[in-house]
Image (cartoon, rainbow, N blue to C red; front, side, top):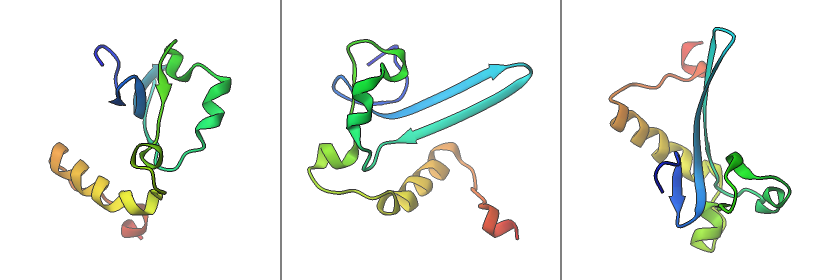
Length: 93
């Protein structure tokens, strides 16, 4: 829900997206929870958001969803949305 970034299922974050700038260095990241052990989030305030939860594809769908199952369609969608071509380090060999 705005103004929070990421992908949400109700009040629970499914995918975190972030950018950090500091000391003349910019870093970015994306975390899509596929089959994450959600109990670890009981010990922290995820993304600093009080009262919000974290979920995973496996939890939401009620079945195990491995990273390998979503990687190819995720990358294909990423390329389409951002009109780019992704190159892996293996392809640069």
